[in-house]
Amino acid sequence: MAKPDLSVEISGIKLRNPVMTASGTFGYGKEFSDYLDLEKIGAIITKGLSLRPKAGNPTPRIVETPGGMLNAIGLQNVGIDAFIGEKLPFLRTVDTPVIVNLYGNTLEEYGELAEKLDRLPEVAGLEVNISCPNVKQGGIVFGTDPNAAAEVVGLVRRSTSKPLIIKLSPNVTDVVRMADACVSAGADALSLINTLTGMAIDLQKRRPILANITGGLSGPAIKPVALRMVWQVSQAMAVPIIGIGGIMSATDALEFILAGATAVQVGTANFLDPSAAQTIAAGIEDYLAKNGIADVKELIGALKI
Image 1 (cartoon, one colour):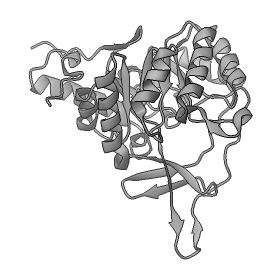
Image 2 (cartoon, helix red, strand yellow):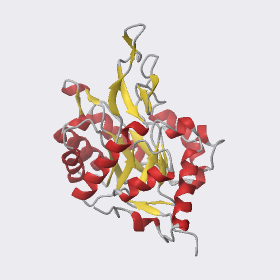
Image 3 (cartoon, one colour):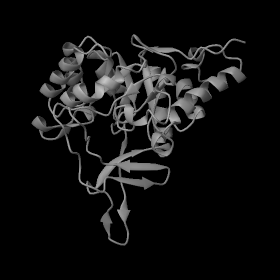
Image 4 (spheres, helix red, strand yellow):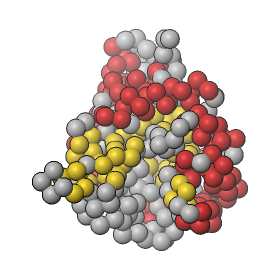
């Protein structure tokens, strides 16, 4: 039997395999280049970028939890101009699609970022983080209000011709309603889920461990929630979905694909094993070969109910 076909496509972005790296867990790509072959994974998704550099939250801002970790990094990043001048030159040398994650605190910031990135041929697509406070609207988070989310997506859609992926928050009552609002406003694909909000307490000090008090929970603990949401959205609409949440092995990745994901993102696993994304991609290929499956696309949404 010939080698299985692992290639998939997300709204025109051709991936050699369905394994991507999750924003915020893989730096800007170069940081991991000594630990894995960047040309053996499907896509690199950068750390979330803002218009201006951001220092992030005070420490401590990471804490390990049973089955995962909490982070309150605060979206620390170098800013769009430093990314273009200092980070993009390396990424140009890698034959793997680069998807830039971006966020803004106002509608105008989202639009301006999208316009800047639209001019860069090296950027294959945009992933928009809508789990940010809207500082002009009393602290509403774009990603928990369908109308606010649609407004952001619509503005970014008008600001770029690149494939547009919206990263959904799980901290909502109805994820399908949020997904529908984003797709109706112009999203080409959806990635889900972002982290769940959680906290940890130091019993001896009787204080929250994180300086920010709360943080985003990721890792194996959130996988069942993420799987359920991916399945729900895949059942409700025909749009490419990228599954995220506790993917530590090829088995985890394949479960998301069966639930309806075209591709997956590896996040927390990168902190345990910096070569995790490549290992998971190889594991998917091994599973297909052993089970006589010629094409990974045969498994997308193939869950038996």
